[in-house]
Image (cartoon, rainbow, N blue to C red; front, side, top):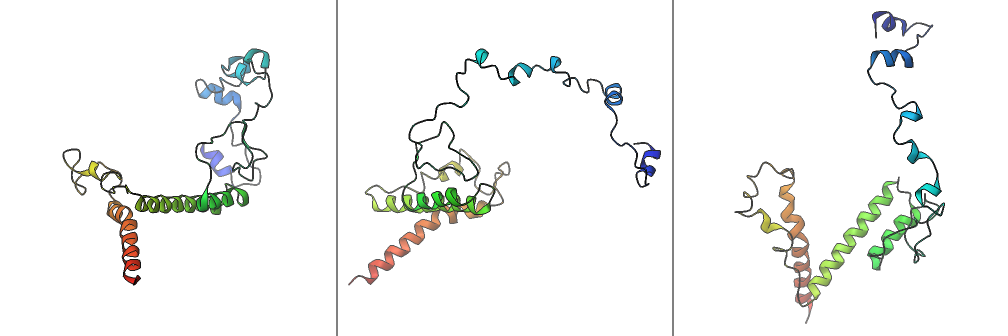
Length: 193
């Protein structure tokens, strides 16, 4: 911007601030090379020519089993292909279904309900593990061993890691649920006659 343009911005006759195509093309080498469709390499892909792509449909045939699948409220229908590996079940599934049925993906409530459903599933998995004959081993199955030498420096000394600021929370997050569950079981056993 030259000095005249700067001072003229605040006058009643506002000047043309955006330069013309010709001025930009003369000033910036290669500016506007993709304006002409003949020069654009992606133009053939942008054209709808089913005979060249081999597509024989406008919308792909829908995958079977989509009845009752979770779908965001802002979408008119389920996508033609979807995953079926983790169907919704139990209390966590009901919470997740509520998130999809009632709230748009643009709402915080949608995502908070999905996180709540995830946390409920974690508590359920930990409970099932405690009640099974072979409970999970929190030391070897949580990655704690990866912090021990010779693989890594001790927890407080490795400054290359990005998670150093919240490292103090790791023992609470890993051991906390186990300690609470143990405390609850001990309380229940003390109350029994």
